Length: 332
Ligand SMILES: NC(=O)c1ccc[n+]([C@@H]2O[C@H](COP(=O)([O-])OP(=O)(O)OC[C@H]3O[C@@H](n4cnc5c(N)ncnc54)[C@H](OP(=O)(O)O)[C@@H]3O)[C@@H](O)[C@H]2O)c1
Image (tube, rainbow, N blue to C red; front, top):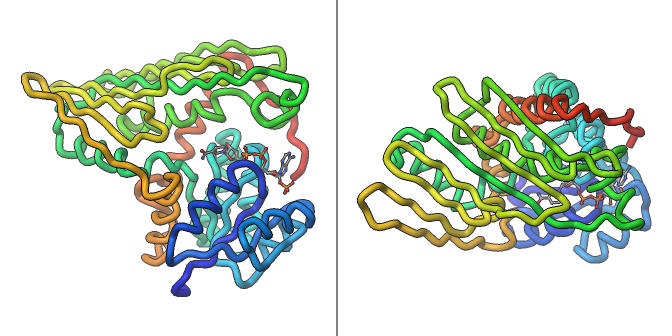
């Protein structure tokens, strides 16, 4: 591995800008290439972030021999094809969430990474922020006893307009909807605490574009633990998470981008921790990828591939209960 890890981004859209800002803040990483379906868009992004290699096709980017690792930042339906393109070209991949649209795609993608012996990780950035590291420590140390129940909500209010109805939040053909966009964070948190559920029950409201505008999910686990989750793209809700154990509880305000948490143990004064980000918060997932690559690992222990697959499976079951099916996606 070179001293400075050579990153590139595939798909210079909204989130790619935030990711590039985070990369700029990491001293042993550099962003050396950008790939777009359109050279002009690659050039515009490259000018903003001072990126030397500009590619007007994803294939060209994947085959750039200077690149070590590629961040996939396209809408959900294209994660699988874009990530496989890069893995097959011998590149390590950090792929935006959800890892794929469904479990069938996830299985294919994960098999590809394993077959080509390349690193792959879902960019579940909230797992790596300092507060979540602390929460995992508290759980591992049994500070709240045995975790028994969890609640997590993540709802934003976006109003449907003629302009955004074809965008990735509302368009069925781009696998829009609340669950895949932000519900995935709640499912991932429940998975981090309890593992894979044994029983899944879900309801959703399907809006006029055919996507789940809001949804609620109840999960039950082997030993009777229960998670109650909600997500929305048309209703602003709490964005908090709470984990309740046999001896106390953990409250994580604004859990998807938490910088504080409160630990409450029965009979004791609550303890509040403050853990601000070093930058915009994306740095921690980047550092995890770099740690894994330097250690020669093909996946992260914090966000393992089988767990990403289990998370997509949970969302598949919920979607099947609503009767929501996506149309065949266009090729990227
Ligand atoms: N971690 C987070 O906090 C966070 C936040 C927002 C989004 N995300 C995730 O990041 C991914 C991208 O989200 P975004 O909001 O950045 O998306 P976006 O701006 O709508 O699209 C990103 C880029 O994807 C490329 N693209 C390829 N095929 C496309 C198609 N058929 N239609 C539209 N764009 C296409 C486009 O780049 P070119 O055409 O120039 O190649 C576009 O600029 C999603 O999977 C989302 O879940 C994560």
